[in-house]
Amino acid sequence: MEIRTRFAPSPSGFLHVGGARTALFNYLYARANGGKFILRIEDTDQDRSTESSFQTILESMKWLGMNWDEGPEVGGENGPYKQSERLEIYKKFTEELIEKKHAYRCFCTTEELEIKKKQADAMGIPYVYDGLHANMTDREIQEKLDAGIPYTVRFKVPHKTVIVDDLIQGKVKFDAKLIGDFIIVKSDGFPSYNYAVVIDDHLMKISHVIRGVGHLSNTPRQILISEALGFDLPVFAHVSEIVGLDGKKLSKRAGATSILAFRDLGYTSECMVNYMALLGWTSEDSQEYLPNSRSAEIFDVARCSKSPSTFDVFRKMKEEEKETVNLTSLSTEDLAAYLNPKSKLNWLSNKYIRDAEIHDLTERIHPFLKDVKEIPEDIKKPGNPTLISMLDSIRVYLDRLSQAPPYLVEFFKNDISIEDEEARNIATSGNAGLVIQKFYALLSESSPVTGDDYKAMMDQTGKETSEKGKNLYMPIRVATTGKSHGLELPILFPLLGKDKLLNRIRQIATEINLIF
Image 1 (cartoon, rainbow, N blue to C red):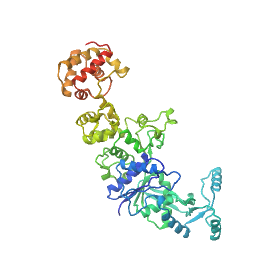
Image 2: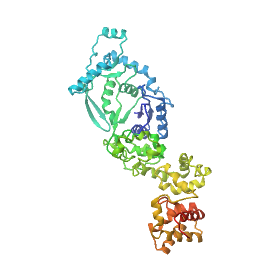
Image 3: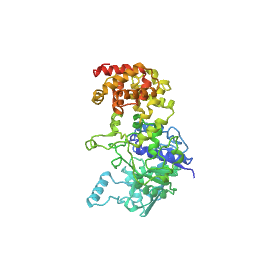
Image 4: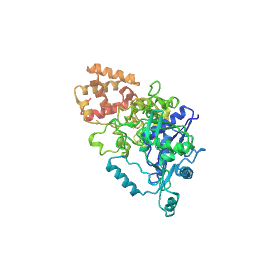
């Protein structure tokens, strides 16, 4: 059997982590088994579907590298791949279901149904449609049709136990009589989700339906429709839900942000794919760092967990933030303030950045440098030798590509000053002045080139001032950068050079009234 999986998003918003994880698992399973991955757009909700959302979904999928074998922009023998273009296909199956008495027209108004629902609520029982129009005569139906009364089409649910044999969740039983006759075609002629998806999956020869566990409750309806139409069932696999650090389901206020936001924050697509693959799945050897598309070679949906997976990218919200902060509406800069610095995504991202081919890294980092005025334009060009040297020196410090500019700007600063009160205290406390004076003197008298040369000079400063550790290195750092943190000094100093370092020290010395 050929493995054929699909991702079927609704174009009513951006592609968020939950949807992207579903797409990824389908993509990886198809690739790992030499199968086909299909992209299908479920746009039957015409009030919410938009062209901009459709384009955003395509852009997100392309950025993640999840190239589909059939679907929009690619085509295929099982199209169209937008549900709104498949209405005639659904109509044929609807007529068949009505003819075989598996479905019927329902002329109930919205107001009538709402009254029935309120009555059920008042009695404290679940609302189940009572099948009022299930047994109308042909004459009664025709009279209502002739009168132009709007109608929906409902599926006639048999009273039976439906068993979902799920690859991840195991066998799950549902009592069909608690479902009630449900709508498969809305009054506007568009099919419901549960109806269209069954027909599409059958005609597109989908072998495995891999989706979030939230869809498990939809599955008995889909099985009943499949049985009524004589379709073979696909293999179902419902993956665990994703929760935040607070243990709650992701929401707009707690992490359900656009996938493209992570691109703009400076994470690479390979890193994001690696991270999402670990949200509910583990490799057989328990490895977490899976570069070079290794997950596409070894992914097995049967190794997915039932337990919720934790999306740890964003820190826990403070109480005062929970009701006011909507992560989906924040700018990239503001969103960065809510990142969890100790997330697994950051750990993976740092490894990807450190292991990246350096010329490729200069290409990827270019979007984050193009508007930085402090860096000369010729240096920004991908492949520039100076940029390569600098990036190679700082990459170990980067969890995101967007963190690079402040480090790189440091190399081009001619004028500096003390950044904050912490740095000022470091430069003016204890023997800091003596350390700065001695380092300046040694630097003036020598010609250091390598990081080891500068390290030896700092060690000599320590011997002559009887200082070591932070009392030695921190005053030198502030005197040469104006900051209390940053790159390791033996890495920074060779890139700045002797003359720039001497000039910087003189500026800081003037600021703190230190005389050489």
